[in-house]
Image 1 (cartoon, rainbow, N blue to C red):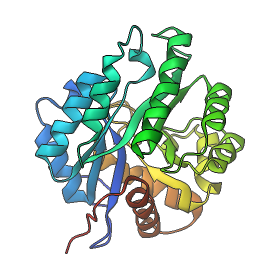
Image 2 (image 1 turned 60 degrees about the horizontal axis):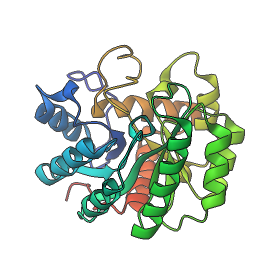
Image 3 (image 1 turned 30 degrees about the vertical axis):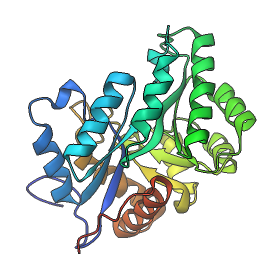
Length: 274
C-alpha cells in the first residue's frame, strides 16, 4: 500500500484510467486541481469527466482543455431531458467536435427516480444514440431500473461501430452477457468492493478482462475503505485491486488490460510515462 495515500500501489510505468467521473461538480470546487494531481501521482493518469446536461458538458470540455490528464464526454442524462429543446442537439454536436471529447454520454433511462417522464427519456435516449452513430463516437449508458428496456433499445439500434459502455454496471451475469453481444464494455464501480455486492463481484470475476473498464463515478460510490465519503479518481485503484483479488491475478494485469481497453474504446493518447 502507498502509506501516504492508503492506496494500492502500481508498479513503475503502469497506469490506469478512471473512465467515468464528474469533476465539474461542486464537490470539487475547493480542491479540484489537487484531486486531479493526486490521481495522476497515484498512476491514474487519464480521467474522463462526464457531461450530464448542457452546462456540465460545457464544463467538462473546459476541464479537458485546462488539464492534460482530463478528457470529456457530452450528453444529457435521463434526469435532465424533460422539455429539452431541439437546439440542444446542435450544441451537443458542436461540443463533441472538440478533440478531447471522447464519447456521447451519459445517456439512457432511469425508471427509479424518474425525474423526467419515461416517454421523454425514451425519445432523447434514441436521439442521442443516433447522434453518437452520426459522429462516430462511443456511447456511455446509464441504466437504472430499466435493464430490459435499455437492452431492447440498444439491440434495435445496433450495430454500434464505435462501441459503448454500460456505466456503473448493476445487473447480473446474464445481463452482462447480453451487453457483451453488442460489443459493449462493462464498467465496474467501487461498489465491487462492498461486502454484500456478490452479484457484481461475480460479474467482475467472470466477464472477459478484454471487456472490463474501471470507474469511480465520483463524487459518488466511494469504494471501501472510503465508503460513505466523497469519492475521488485516485480511489479507482481500490476497485482495480478488488477485481484482481476476485480473478486471482495481479493488480498490474488488471491495470494493463483495463487501460488498453479504455485507450482503444475512447481513442485516448497514451498516458504512460516516457
